[in-house]
Image (cartoon, rainbow, N blue to C red; front, side, top):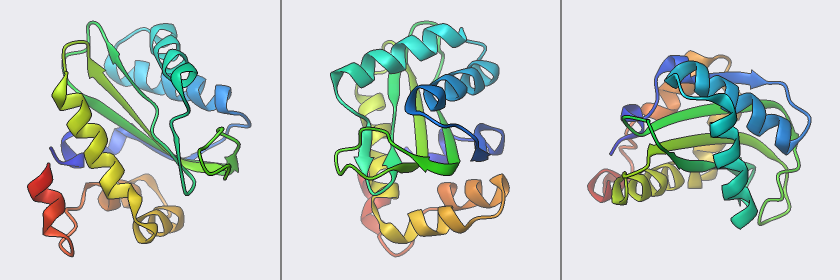
Amino acid sequence: MEVSELLTVESVIADLRVTSKKQALQELSKFAADQTGQDERAIFDILLERERLGTTGVGDGLAIPHGRMQGLEKIQGFFARLEKPLDFDSIDDRPVDLIFLLLAPEGAGADHLKALARISRLLRGPAICEKLRGATNRDALFALLSQVPEANPNLRAAS
């Protein structure tokens, strides 16, 4: 599964203005609700429930909040670059400025895990994160996120 199957240009926010983890999850829930037609509060509750299990702040300024929802027809992703980094209780205690939200249908099973793994592999490298931090608008962010990394063909094979 490629990231371009999860995201559209419209599902990218270039400079999200938030001051806390909770506010970031609230704003992303609202954004995702507008895009999916799902209930904003239901999305927020799913994300909070997942955060209670353990932080989705995976380190290096990146968080990947995720959850499964009834009524969702396909796996969908949403990306936000924050205007200012914020505390996200990350595993490395560094503030987060890049958030990739992933929502999956209740029965997505292995596809949900594959999508999470794909996102994690894409964003694990410092080079892509620095490019995302330097991008000037959502079109540029989307282009970076949806590119297939030619330097590492194993990423495509592992999807």
